[in-house]
Amino acid sequence: MPRVLRLLLRLPRRAWVIARARPLLTLLTVVVLAAGTAVGLWRYAVHQWHTAQADLEGGRPHDARERLTLCLSVWPRSTEVHLLAARAARLSGDLDDAEYHLGQCLKLNDGATNAVQIEYLLLRVQTGEVDDVAQALISAVESGHPESPLILETLARSYIIRLRYKSAYACLTRWIEQQPSVATAYQWRGYTLERLNNHKMAVVDYHKALELDPDLIPVRLRIAEMLLEDKQAPEALPHLERLYRQAPTDPLVQGRLGMCRFLQGDIAEARRLMEAAVVHLPKDPELHVYLARIDLMEGRGVEAERRLRMVLESDPSDTETLYNLASALQLQGRTAEAAAVRAEYDQKRIVVDRINELLKDVADSPTATANDHAEIGRLLLEIGRDKLGMYWVNRALERDPTNQQAHLALAAHYDRKGDAVKAAGHRRQLRTAPAANAVTSPPNPERQPNP
Image (cartoon, rainbow, N blue to C red):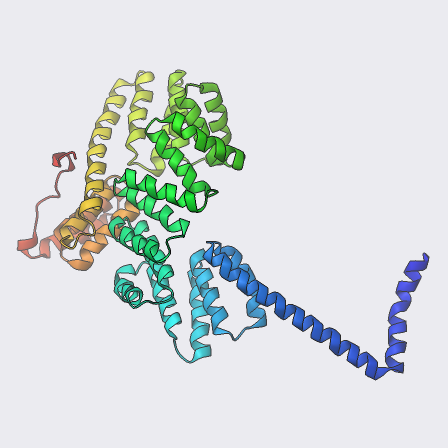
């Protein structure tokens, strides 16, 4: 047996002999070691606590949650730690865990502090109750609440999800006024300005975000995408080449550089880059549309059709895809089908334009009516944007439970889905609603002016 191994085997026995011979020294040693371990653990937990706070400020809630797990094992009765854990869980999308930690705060504090109340309101915003709690949160901001930036960020995020861009813009502008050096605020406001059709000011905000954080990949990528949308490949190329050096394996960067090469006429390199990217981004509509355009150029109508129909399965309202699908069908000699798709394209283009007009000028206007919200919902449902369509129709019904446009829209929607029971339920609302609010049919989108 090796000498070192023999020595290791004797250690427990030697330790026992020493402990029996000098019990006080042994006890003191154990106490010192235990105290040193406890102090080390406490200092490590403090470090994890501060790092978790930085993670949340930097938009890394998942990392914060991992660190806060250790903090909770050291300070299980700290309302401050539970409150931060609730916030990290909420921002990670784990709303059940967020509610659990807020419940712990209530138990430990025998009631809700102002900070806990605010976090509960933010949780309600994230669960979809933004209209019920927005006024209370805005009042807190106006009163100078220390969490005002977080409140404004959460409200803006909720408004963006619900396509309420004017309200989102207002929150983001106030956030920027309070924290003018936060790149994310400019990034989100740029996104919102795009949806309000103010592309010029969106670019200004995106460039400000890059000024604050030059390595912000999503923002630089979006600037490049906007340039590609305007067919300005030479202007997009420097951004994409920098991104490619910064993140050469990022599929989005590969794909957008491929799109740029396509616009520059380098078809072989464009296909190589986009084919490499689409493996990792199988549902990216832009990649499939560009690859379909290459297929059309090469006479591969069947392959182009396959790609385009895949895009339409996830977004039936994509008018550019419909336009290219008509070309793919025409290339295969399917003239009648191509004509039908072109007609669908013409109709949906009018509807999409009308939706954009309503979202920009009407949706969050103080004079908006239940009928306005019902029209937005109806049009979204007609083009297959069911989740958002239901949101706006339900907003109309919250304001006016007998609203005829809303019930007509839902009846037509459930007819399309084959749910005769629900469709009939909404038609019964039409028969029993007051005659003054009745309409015979929803407005025809083809009669709407094309802005």
